[in-house]
Image (cartoon, rainbow, N blue to C red):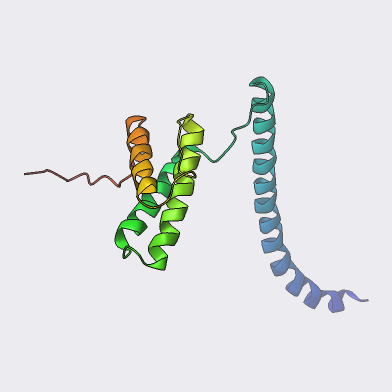
Length: 142
């Protein structure tokens, strides 16, 4: 090939290679951050004796309970949606109790007894510091 034949090749390749190099550098940054995060987790697990949490974080459980509680209160009692939301809410109550080592018997009851046990569990979780209902900051403001 002659020099004149290579000029159009340079005109096409150079503008295409520069963004590719930039994207590669950004990708490498993500790879390094991911590796550093993994190394920190392994080091932390090694230093703390390798004890990993058994379930989801308490913040996630509390957030899910607030979301499901809002959905339960907004649905029509007796409807299929209400029943589904209530079952999911109960599952998350069981997770919260397990995370805090609180006793609960939500799986042992049905109907009115289940509702009473749910109220008892909600009271215990609230006493333990869980916020089950969303807090309105401007509530009770004159």
